[in-house]
Amino acid sequence: MWPLLRRGRLLLQALSLAATAFTAAEARDLRAIGVLVGDLGNPFFVELGKGVEAAARELAGPDVGVTVRSSGYDLDRQTAQIDEFVKDGIDILILNAVDTTKIEPAVLRARATGMVVVATDVKAAGASATVTSDNRQAGKLACRYMAERLGGKGEVLILNGPPVSSVIERVAGCRSELTASVGITLLPDDEDCGGSLDGGLACMTAMMVKHPHIDGVFTINDPTATGANIAADRAGRKEFFIASVDGSPVAVDLLREPGTRFAATVAQNPRGMAELAVQMGIALFKGEKPAETLIEMPVTLMTADKAKDYTGWGR
Image (cartoon, rainbow, N blue to C red):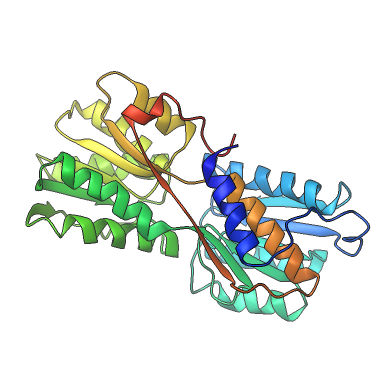
């Protein structure tokens, strides 16, 4: 079992949540769990959904229904999906919010009906509990590596993303490391590249036109990084390297390629995150109150020299 998952379980035990699996009889009133994610085109969210399904079967029994839906990073669509889940009688919602603050009215409506809402991967205002990676640390690890590799000087581009806590915290962590080096110039990073391969491709293509020389690129997730890498290949730009966040199989494969532009990715653990979210959700559904309602899971910097032995995402 991957170390992050073991450490995540220890965190949960420290919060005094039950460590033993719930039997079907104990969870007989729990009928349905809903999962809403930003984009099922992102392998991280696919893995998160599978993790919820596996944890639900293990902890609540085979009869509990699990429904996974993508919101396409559309706030109106996600709001409507939450309202639909209320009508469908969903008991626990594992929510990857597409907007950390603007989702609050829908979350509060759901909770008013008795639904337990566990924010996952990103924070969601009004949620019952939250399980995320330590996203600020993820940004710091990636960009500390970048600063060291650059020798403290150069022009660095940040490819930003949707207005959610994970992205905001990763960028803040990254900027704190890069601005500590007076020789590093940060290029503008206000554009939302969508957190997707297509968005990374489009943003990187536009940025390379604006900036004839770039030394390093930090992207908020691996799909964005993959798109940026494709754009650089098409443009024949070889002067910069890319660091990212996720630890996805695609990113690790790129790390392993000889002469790769892809230099680092900070590994998350979507399976472990999903399991913790389901455990917290079931505990809250049973009327238990955890000592803490926010868990930030540890992350690990993955570079080419470590990629050979990396199995990835809790497998």
